[in-house]
Length: 157
Length: 94
Image (cartoon, rainbow over the protein chains, first blue to last red):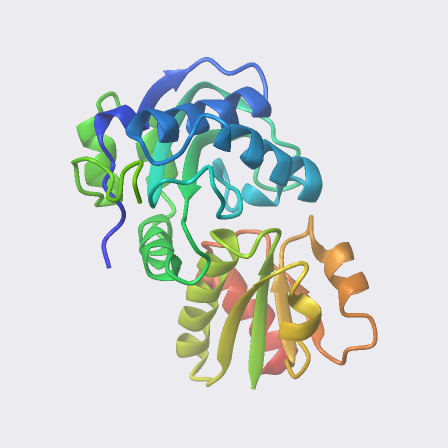
């Protein structure tokens, strides 16, 4: 199963984020801009990190921001934010973060296959640095193997 | 054998850990049933599990949630490092 579509609206390059909250909020804004979520999903993702800590920093330089499925999610979606300056999330081993991937899923069961695809991408340990260096949305889509196009489902889903 | 992977909300990170744990098991030529769970569900999900995989940030919560269980709790730093996952799995079950 391929990743959800990653339109240009879901990608933000060289974002200036002062702290991890701003970095997560940028990933949330991109998810909202693509139509996958409402703007409030950013707060849900921040809540998860405040509740459980920086475990979302799953690999060196990479945060996988996400929240529970809920009314803020219109459709399965991912967003990608690269940071102009690396930001500390408070993870003992994988800080600082250069790339934030935002993930929105509609239910916990359906998403496993597309997340497994993310695992395939990031098992290549050089890919975080390559995404961090990318200067155009198309490069990031190619690195992730994600399709272009609108997110599925839309507001009515 | 049963293995449970745990993250805060049971989506995303635990699914990545599940995928890469299965990959690590293949490499070790071991068979196991791997399930993803969230912290709230881990007590039930891990009832008959031998190994629980989670992150350093969550290990204390997981330990409290499964108090009394015989499952071994194993910490993974880099969820995408199949070598690391294979090595921690091998030392706990190999």
